[in-house]
Image 1 (spheres, rainbow, N blue to C red):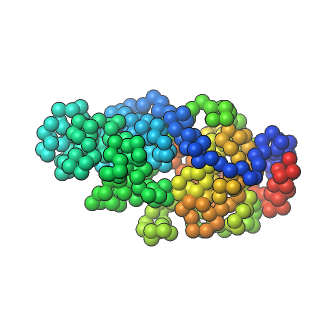
Image 2: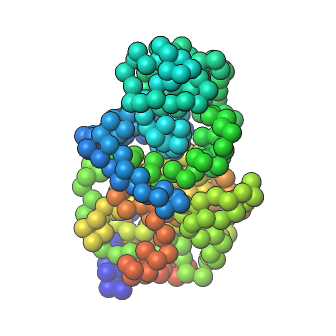
Length: 389
């Protein structure tokens, strides 16, 4: 508790330097740039990577498969509007369709084997990483045996090679609000639509392993310089919330289908203060598809890089900006219901490894790390101090 008191005192002392006005309106263009190639950079490619599917199967990927994944990531990072979520969807699709292999199909298209490839496929006249078909208009054989072209085709959009048809991800209306597996299926139009979601944790693991963030945020604050936190605080004031959906498999409230929920939902009144989990640096703040408006904060906790994510705020409820330094318990936003949401609540995630890490179950993580609670009165005092600063 002593650490928490110190943290609160530190917050009040730092408010004039760190406060961002409550009425801040976030520019979507600015935050789209945050997920461009300037902030997601492919680093060295490992010789192999082992990951686990939703169903619990072990997947071992070799250097060549990871090299193909790096192409998908790079193209996605350079394509406006795709962002991290779109890259994960593309990786899920390629893992499902080809296991990240550039597949020829000499039985249906003999000339395809003349191009560099990672093996043979045999589904209709499908080719390459995403198993795209020349007969469906995805491209020529030469184009579809090229990983960069296929990646551009999968992402699509007005700058894509096939706009407006066949549709890429950016051509799917409200793709950000779909379950990632549903979004992949909307592009692939597979006869087996339920396969893609199984590979989401593998896609997340690939993205984490292959990428690093740029050395600084757009505001110039080094993300690598994140001191050890002084406290860990529950992200909502005591007595203001109720758990409405746990981490893990559940029935999707929009589709009624079985879907994986990557966070924990706590219902609270619209406008309830959202508190920073721990000391850290804001790595993302703004619109993010089905998340509505999203804040991600990078922390160092017990010597490990951890990111906390807070979703579904209204645009006016985002009270921090990328590069801001925050302290545990700081009022960073207000509960809303933007994005894929059925009512006012906070969707909260813990991501070991940082912003691009795969989420884990937040509630046992919080319990294991001795989370402390701020009551509503303490939070109101902090918020008043922020407003007055």
